[in-house]
Length: 118
Image (cartoon, rainbow, N blue to C red; front, top):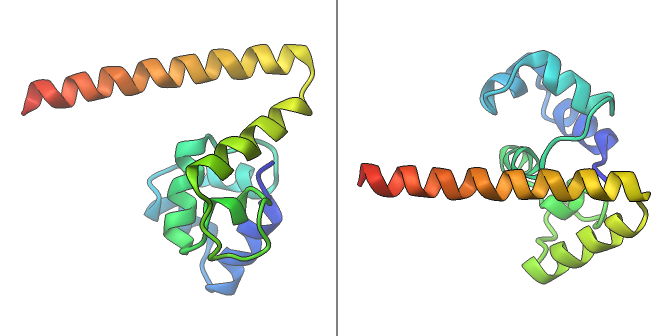
C-alpha cells in the first residue's frame, strides 16, 4: 500500500511545495495533493516517477522497506504486489485485473507507436 506519509515527509524534508513537485513530475497539483492526503493511490508508473524524483526506492514509497535507498528486485516487487492482492476483496481483485490488462494494452500500443516512429 502506498505510504502517503512518506511522500509528505520527503517533500517537506527537501523544502519543496506541492506545486513544485507536481510540476517536476508533470502532473496537476491537485492530483499530487490527493496522493499526499491518501485520497487516491498513484498508479505504479507514477510511483516509479515519484521514487525517481525523490531519490528513494519504490519499496520505500510502498511501505515495503524502511530504508529509502533499499532497492527492490523485480521478484521482491512482484511478491509484494501478490501480498497486497491477497488483502483485497473479490471486487477489488477484479478491478485490479482490469486495470493491469488496460495498462498492458497501453504499453503494447506505446511500444508499437515508438517502433513505427523509428
